Image (tube, rainbow, N blue to C red):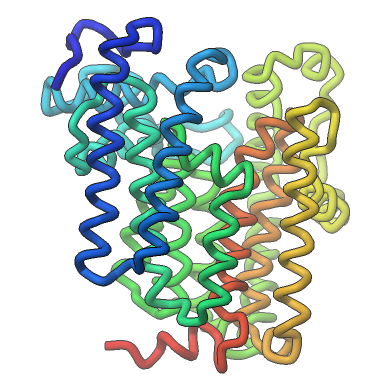
Length: 402
């Protein structure tokens, strides 16, 4: 370990320390790729592709060193990792477990949004944890692990090519390369989706807990899928799906005051976080669950298209949104007979739609929205890729597993 424990992080201004930290990390990641090649879990072409991705992550992090204001929260995860490694526990208050709620009327949550990621990141024996880039390279390793797992579920060469291509799209490339928790959330969601649909209760419960602890709103969304499968068997029949949807809707109405208070709190919190003071002053709170539900289909279509172009940066993500929509339509049309007759597909789609709607409702800033959107939209796209041209859906493949 080459960093001074009294220094939070090193930037590229400390040229020698930065590169003596990150070059060994890059080499370590490439050795991990070679190890998977040796185990025959990757082909030679896949190995070259992943070495290229790690090199891109290395370059992206160098570029972001010159834009420190772009991700103001990026330092928190590195501090928690260092805190854990130095003390074997969390001394920093921001890394510890917090229990809170939006207001007296809103829902209460347990949060380990920095502590749990730090624990998970610390499991990777990275040579150096001295810069933000170090955490970014760990994130890319977790994406590699998810790819290795997905290869066991996606047997078609064409589908593997599609999967590899989405790893090159802007938001996926960016957020899987930097030291934020979003990539970890995405990877957890991928495993959780497959574990739930394969009826693996214990693994599903562990991953759902982790998702709740790291990103509560995503945990709430995936709870819909979790309870739908394990309690109502909504993925096995349309009757079960309708009953589960009715029960879920009834619960939303019963908790309408708490749900509205939570939505309003997070909407204001995001406006404050992105320094949109004028919008805070003109903020109109959500006052009716019925109006929120009626507006949700329109919010979904807007959410799928967002971020809307208002700068060069948002133009890039808007073009990516069009690519995402085109890919989703292509995969759905290619498998329309199979998915239209499958309650599993509708259950997954509703879960995905809830995630898009919730984030679109509470996040005004387009760049911030792109960051929160990608974990849901790419989870759904990967689901569609995994069932593309297959004889059955995931549940049908997974229910006979031992």
